[in-house]
Image (tube, rainbow, N blue to C red):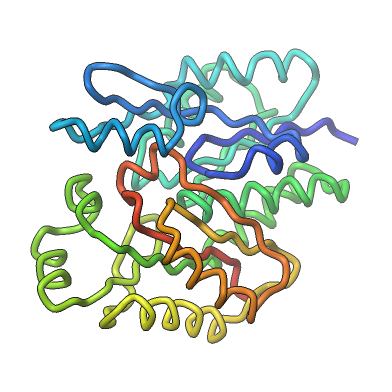
Length: 279
């Protein structure tokens, strides 16, 4: 049986206990603010970033993982005889996936499989966790790659935002769309679709937005073999609404806290669910 190492990046937002349980390697992206650079989840966590943003006129920027850093992580495992499955955030949001491909080409090896998740945050996290669970079942790297690629178009999400300010500042949402939403008290339900953040629904009020998110979940159906991930940013009231609804749909779900890179764009007033539809 092949030795397989699963590698991803910090935008997967998987909790530390999950990462440790499945021996997943997480390479951090970089967050830049106030002239300083930080490794996402290593020397800066999201609550600390929120504080820095409150007292700064500068909106944070993020930096992708470059090929050299990928090679530094890949080489030790290749030397130990591992095959590597490297799954990363959407190529439409970052150059990180392309960097992983360049690193593989530079190392001139067929023992690295790179996958563009076409997703981010808990959507990436679901695919990484699914890969880890398949690895535990003894599947080969080729079998895992096939199943993950089959699942990618079936990763669904519903994200409710208390404020759209960070999405606008980060260039993920037009200022006009946000202004209309704020003016009319409309909540936008966002999703990651084909690798990009898009508006899925517009409803009036937070409670209706959360209800809509779970109606969508029921409509699509949940693949019971796969985990459901509940994304949190720190808005306690919104989180409680989501938590009360998710319990009616699935008993087993994983709560994940947003990381710094994703949190730069989401801000501290968002919450949502990611799942793989029944297909």
